[in-house]
Structures are given as structure tokens and as C-alpha cells.
Image (cartoon, rainbow, N blue to C red):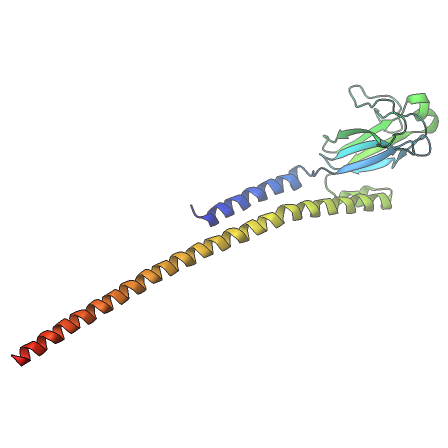
Length: 226
């Protein structure tokens, strides 16, 4: 099998993986960050958009005032924990590094609700949040109630997809160009070798014919002299 064939197969495999990664996974390792307790009992932003496979991460930064948790709840505007749902530890402000808690979105659609029940923050301060799961990046603009949040999400996701696409396609493109160049070089080298052999054969044939001609001419001269 030629080098070009190997390159075509490799490109085909990469495209399949890329297609599955972008279409079926949706997913790229996009991390959606939610800050906990910045300035008081709240989640910022309270509404987050995510695709299946995305990571949602809550951060307790140095600006966190107080101690808070993240507990999955049964419904919007509910403080009742969901049985079997996710739950973080009770965390305070981070030091040099933020305290973090994250989940990976496994649902394909719908919404995920969460709240902080520590010190009745949910009931008394309405400390709740929503993760809205999208079927595609474009759905953010049509479902968002906060245009700036939606634009930020869409732009970030678009840039992440573009960056990943470039990281995949540029090496593949360079590899294909290198393989084609190598194949062309080998073909030209082989062709030049064939031409050299042909030229040498032709030169040998000419020399042989000249020698035969000289021998024949010599015999003619000797015959005429006798």
C-alpha cells in the first residue's frame, strides 16, 4: 500500500473521530464556571447553559463571603434535595487556589436545579441556580433570558470548537502535504532512475552499433584492398 493510501486512511479516521466528537458528543471539554457566594449568598451566574458532556464547575474564590454548598434539588424554586443527586462539601473562600466542585453533564436535555441549604440560604436568600441543557450551541440564543450570558457562552463555545478544529486539521493538513511530497519525490526519483537506465542503455546501444559499423567498414576496406 502506498504512502498516499495510508494518509487517506488516516485522514478518514480523524474525520470520523472529529465528527463523532462534534456532533454526537457535542461535547468538547468545555468548562462552565459558576462562582459561589461572591459578595454574599448567591450563585453567579444563576442560569448556566451547557451541552451534554460539558463540565459545570462551582468555585469558591477569595471573594466568597461565608460558607456554602451545592446540592441538586427536585425542581425550580425548590429547596428539597434530589435523592441520589450531586452534593458538594460545605466550603468557604479559597486561599491561593479556589475551592472547586464539578459535575459532567450526562443528560441530553432538560434542566438541572441546585441550591444551598446551608444556614437556610435557599429558603431565606433564594440561593438557587439552574443549568439548562442545550441540544446545540445555537439554542442558547433562543432560550436564554440573559442575552449577555448567552452571548458569552456562545462565543466561548464557538472559539473552543474553532480552536479544537484548528488543532486537529492543521496537523492533518501538514501530514497529508508531507506524505504527498514524499510520494512525489519517490516517484520522481524512480522516474529519473528509469530515465538514467534508459539513457545508459541507449548510449550503450549506440556505442555497440558504432563499433559494429566500424568493424563492418573495416571489413569492407580490407575486401576492396584484396
